[in-house]
Image (cartoon, rainbow, N blue to C red; front, side):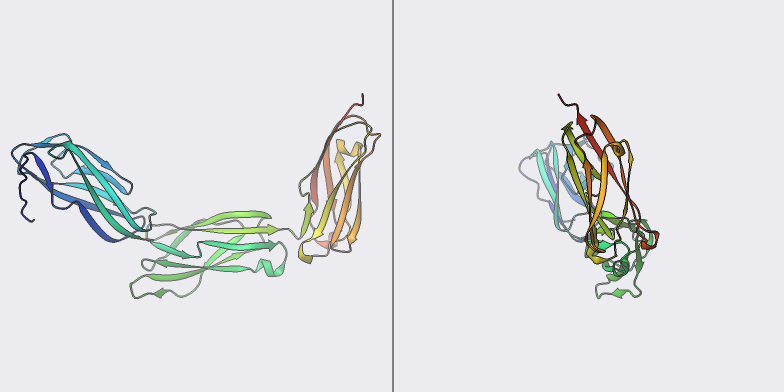
Length: 330
C-alpha cells in the first residue's frame, strides 16, 4: 500500500482511492468492491453512515471495525460494498456516501462498470403476427431466437412455455474468439395454440445460474370470424319499437369454406327475438339478422344464440350472448 501524507487538519480519513474501475462485469453477478483507507491526524474518527446508491448493496466497514465505533489514528481499514450488476447494461456508475465524525464529514466513493448481459437474445421479442387456426401453413410457422451467452450453457428446463407453442434447440453451438457461445432455438406455434391475442414469455432455467427470458406475441385467429364475437346487446328501449342487430360471419382469408349455419336462440331471449341468416358471398360471408318486433312485451331478456354447422364442415359451434331490456310504454 502506498504511503499517505497526513493532512494538516487532524482526524481525517484518507482513502487510497475514491473511484474503482471494475471493467467488464456480467448481468446478475455480484462483485465485492473495497475502498481502503487510513485514519490520519491526531484524533480518532467515527463513521456513522454508509448510504449506498443504485447498484451498490451490503455496505460495511471491514472487520473488526464497526459503524459508530471510534477509530484511532493510524488505523487502516476499508469500506466494503457489493456491486450487483442486476439487469443493468453497458456503462454503470454506483456510489456510496460515507458520513461521520471526521474532518470532511462526508466522502463519496464510486465504482464504474461495463455490464455485459449473461445472455443476449436476437430478437428479444418473437412476432408471429396473425396465425389462423386450422391453416396448414400457420400451424407449421416457426421462428428462430439466437442466444449469445458468456460461455457454453445448457437449458435445464423451461419454467414457462406459452400454451400451444414449443421450443427446441437447433443442433450446433458456435464458440466465439472471446469465449462466448452462440446457440439457436426454434420456436413453433402448433395447432393447440388458443384463439385470441397472445403476449407472454418463455422462461428457461440454465446451468449458468441465470434465467433466459424472451417474449412471444401472436394474434391467433379462428378460421371463422364473427363480428361481434361474444355479445349482442339491444340495450334499453321502449315497448312498441322494433329493433334489429346484425352479426357478420366471414371465412378468415378464405382459409375454410363456411356453409350456411343453423341458428338457435335459447333462454328468455327466444321469447322476443328472431334470427335469420342470408349468404352474402357463398362459402365466405354470411350475415345474421336478429330482430325484436314492436309487439314484444316489456321485460328483461337474456339468452344465447347458438350457431352450428354441418358436421362434415369440421367447424366448431359458436355461442353469442344476447340481452335486451324493454320498458313499458307510458
